[in-house]
Length: 137
Image (tube, rainbow, N blue to C red; front, side):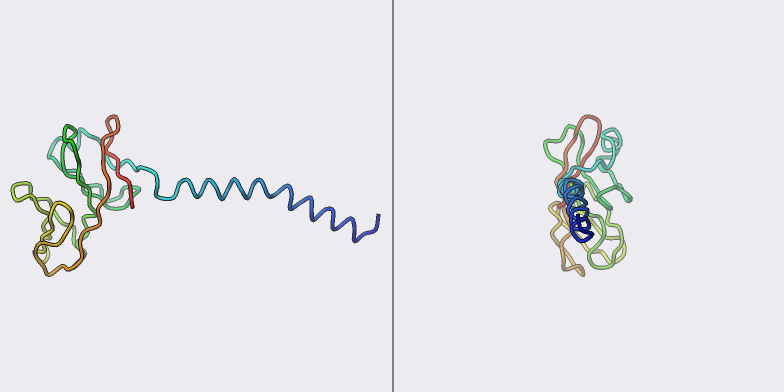
């Protein structure tokens, strides 16, 4: 066998043996990209006050409103789109309010009163077992 043929066979063998590893790596990344539900806290913590603020969750900052017995939960990114402050949930008025400049957001994250002009980012949220989970979009 000539040296050139040997090098071609070794190169072809390396490519053939590396292909399954590359395919597996690509497919596992595709399946885990933001399609997964992320745990942000426990249902017991949510039930204490009717809201759960998870500043450092795997999905980023999340504020969940509701209780474990609610039919639906509301989850938003609590970062004000105007000033970057963390909005708070005002249960009596059923709105999110920014403490910095007074921007107000509806339950669905839409701006009710400025100076903010962009809505809060929202997430799907649910209870799984004893955990509160959100699905980043």
